[in-house]
Length: 115
Image (cartoon, rainbow, N blue to C red):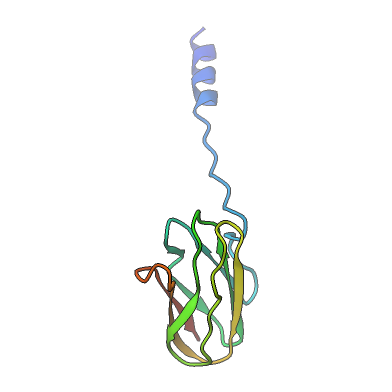
């Protein structure tokens, strides 16, 4: 009887990791994914090789932008990305650190380190 209780108790405590939101999975090769979630870029800082790509996906309940603030290379601006569906990607051909912001939420900051 004790064995049956122990087995039942263990089976009831099984926990599984919550699946990543669509587009938030780890990238592959030279591509890195960043999500917008709870008015944050997740992760806030990523590293890609020269020529690497970052794909941003808005999984949040509110619109966002991805707008270059400073760093090497051409300026970029995603324009307003709709809540829950917006996607933007950028290739980084120049080494250095690129800071970016959400122009809708100026405290939402991110960084791409290109090596």
